[in-house]
Image (tube, rainbow, N blue to C red):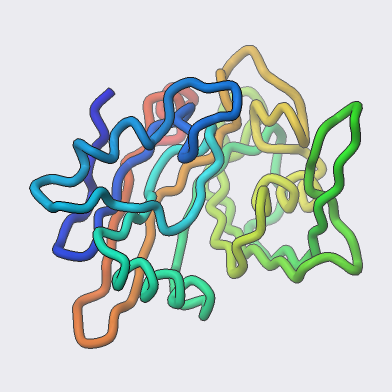
Amino acid sequence: MNIEILYEDGEALVINKPAGLPIERPRKGGASLEDHLEALKLGFQRAPQAVHRLDTDTSGCLLLARNPKSLKRFNAAFEAKLVSKTYLGIVAGVVSEEGGTIDLALSKISSEAKGWRMIVAKKGKPSVTHWTKRKELEGGLTLVEFRPETGRTHQIRVHAEHAFGRSLLGDPVYGHKDARVSRTMLHASAITVPREGKPAIIAEAPLPADFLALGAG
């Protein structure tokens, strides 16, 4: 598997993470991003480190720090909500409105039967997602752009299901699997990271083949 590099300089890489590749090694073993970090040194002594997380199913822009100092600065930028991220998702239903903001606090729950998941809860952590309808697709699907203001686990997936009454296509946790796709249809399409005294890191990831196959291009 070749990892496409979308942005590179002395302190950062942005890669186009393939769908299906977990960032951390699964407990049961198997492939992960860790298998590629040596190749992603690209002549540097240190292997780069992922600054944030993307779900295993989610494709697209992933920021890697090339040294501990830049990792600390990038983490601070995320905590200060200075990083801008854009996602594209395919909703498994018709979205009638043109756009809006989803403001629903989220909390984590766990059960033996279903494992862990995120739920909407008044006492949960504040979670805000801005969205814009991009395109109606065949089969009653809708391409939606999401711009999360916060970065909670599964935020877009839970917000989509509550706001639209339909989950993202193929989401086995908050919706259901779908024969048309092999994963939850969410793609991290762009990221911008401002830096003091340096140009901002700006990267965009092209739409993957499974999005294009559904007419999202």
